[in-house]
Image 1 (tube, helix red, strand yellow):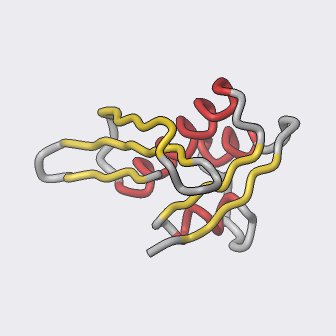
Image 2 (spheres, rainbow, N blue to C red):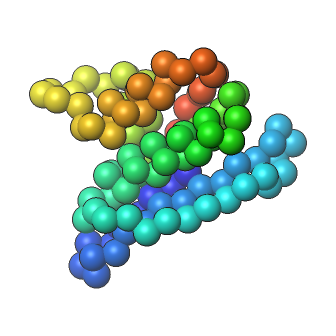
Length: 107
């Protein structure tokens, strides 16, 4: 999954793909989103991807993101002073469903 933002143009989007265990493409998607922050775009992407995965019946999921900050926030490897962003809380709520989800930071 990936999210991107071009603040100077006011453009943001996210997209991702699903692959099977052999790495073959199953499904892909892209979406325009409303944000002016790259981390927020990454959060939206991860949340939307996980929602779609659950609805599609993918109950074993390997989530790959190039945002180490987001992966660390979701897996609670970093402490956040104050309140967690609402999208991080939503992602953590999705983790409580009956499925296996693992996160990887990719570069």
